[in-house]
Structure formats: C-alpha cells, structure tokens
Image (cartoon, rainbow, N blue to C red):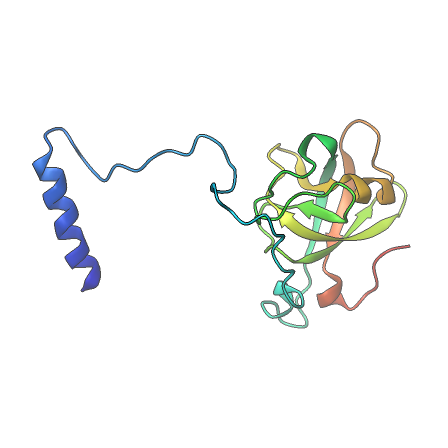
Length: 163
C-alpha cells in the first residue's frame, strides 16, 4: 500500500517534464566513501557472521586462484568502509559477508593463514580471493601471477588454521 502511494508522486513528477521517463539519480564517478565519512575505523563485528548463517554440518569450501594487493591501495577505503591495511591479515571476496574469517591454504606449499574479509573482489576472472600483502607473505604468494588456494571456514569446520 505504501509503495503504491509512492509511485503516484513519481509518475506525476515524470509527467510534468517532457521526455523524462523515470527517476533521475546522480551517477557515482568513483567508488569511495561519501564525503564527510568518519575517519574512525569501524568496530570489528563480534564473532563470525557465517557462524550464525550456516548449520553445524554445513562446510564452506572453495578452490581457485589467489592474488594479492598492497601498497597501491594501502590506507584507501575498502568496500566495508574501513581503511585497507596491507600489513593486516585481510582479504577481498566476492560474496562472503564482511567480517567472515576464512582459512586460506596455498595448495603449492601447504601454508595457511586466517584472514578477515573486509573488501569485495577480485575483479578478475579466474581468481576467488585477493589477500593483503601480509597474508601473501604468510602464504608465500609474493611472486608474480595467480596461485592455487583453497578456502574454508574454521568456525564451521572446527579445524585450526595456520602453520
């Protein structure tokens, strides 16, 4: 009922302007936080978001390419709103909720690290995760190119992560 009443003013507004076919919204030119955004880092959410979303017998596992990013984005805002710190154990994933802790395992050498999802990406086909410089060092991913990794959720599996 409310939605119907909202549509009437919009359709009347569009009828008043010849050639106008809908609601005009400004386009974002860059993916940055709005001006006036707080300089404070957002508080880290308590616990892991997926621990309440998944059944205890449900296991998350993903396998694919990983890459890393560092100095070029250091201190810039991530999709979660916090500033990227290349020296923290964080990562970008396309769909996992922000704050989710993911175990990343390098399938070439067996090294593992626990990272927290705080950004969206990777934006390149063939990759499933972009990790921070610190995570890349821990996983021995610092060379050029994409490395094969496996992702799992320790909060769901109950298995430890890291060497």
